Amino acid sequence: MASRWEKLGYALGDAASGGTVWKVMSVAFPLFFTNVFGLTFTDAAMLMLVARMFDVVTDPLMGSIADRTQSRWGTYRPWLIFGSIPLGLVFALLLYTPEQGPVGKRIYAYALYLLMMAVYTMVNVPYGAMLGVMTDNNDEKNQFSSYRMVGAYAMSFVTLAAFPYLQRAVGGSDQRQYAAVGAVFGLTACLMTLACGLMTKERLKPVRAEKFQMRQFVDLLPGRPWIFLTLIALCTNFFNGFRFAAAGYMMEYCLGREITVSGLIINYTVLMAFGEVTCMIFGGLSPRFTRIVGSKRMAFVWSSVICVVSSMAFFFIPAWPESISLIVLTVIVTSVGIGLYSPVLWSLYADVSDYATQKNGTSCTGLIFSSGTMAQKLGGAISGSLIALLLALAGATMVSDEFGNTVIDPASVTDSVRTMVWALFSLFPAAIALAMGLLAYYFPIKK
Image 1 (cartoon, helix red, strand yellow):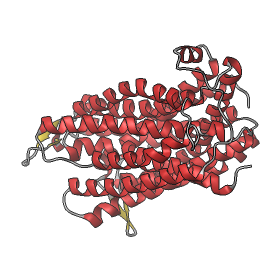
Image 2 (tube, one colour):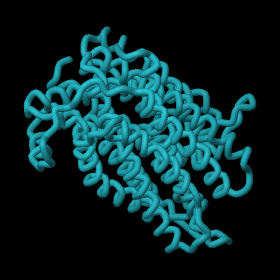
Image 3 (cartoon, rainbow, N blue to C red):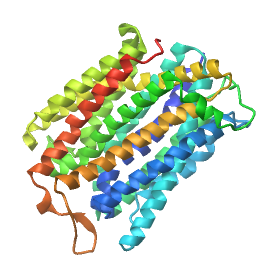
């Protein structure tokens, strides 16, 4: 039996990658690249799409490499231990705005963003795959997944809630504020990733293939559980990607940059922080909820129903600052569903890994979990790119300010742009959650 200390250590891994690095990339980057760094909508959209095509190659390749790693620290843990410093350093550099012209900034953004995706893959794919070798007990896998989600959401809350206060403490230009925030959160992510690698244990030895074979990739394709799970994961990440990428634009264009209620600053990061603390609570309750409804599959279905209904209801909330209490409440209700299904998703990856090992005779745990990381990146980037393109389609345009930076033209933010932003946070996610629930209902593994 794994100790509570080890489960806490495992939670620190996703607190670093999901709760810090990926959360800032999901919530702040779309707005940062256009409004602070100075990329156009088209440049920002292309940057994220190019990075995702890059991930299509690197994620499964990293999974296969991780499966074949042999060291004194185990199969997957060394990637966390030695990848912790690059993860924090590159993340910090990515939030720095160099004093260069448009071409220089574009090159810097592409180079650092691609490097960030590579380092994130190097750490997060082995981290996810560790679940398959830490225990062979199905209930304990659910517990590890639950700890993981609680850690991720707890740190997400800290990250998002602290964001505006760190910016205010640093002061100065937006570029200076984001650079300082990147340094603080980069160091935090580095230390938590290192702690995860040192505090966990690998108890099971994967049945390794003798050498790298393309057959491993081919073997996955006919497997119905893997196909269903990949589609479900894409839906969950599209759902979150649309909401998080749209949140900044929603506060900026529909509600005002920030709202102060009884001394509490509510900007786009704090708004989503309410959801993160809700996800943390209900992520901890997810194993109990799964036992109540009878299976992981049905836990996912009912969680999706919550997300569909609450997301649709959000669209009908009036888009003015006086609605902030109702807006926060609806975000919290939606996050109940997210918190309940998130631990289930990663537990299903362990089930699919076990299924594939039994069917094919060799372990491809890292390869299977890499598809989860790839789905996370695809969902976040494609949704972010679509948001940039849809806002441009709705009429938002870019202009140059007096310093030569590319910024959004305030005159182009019309009612059609505001309606599009509101729909991107509500109706688009509702449709995605509906598809997610239907796919979960027909998932082949009944555990």
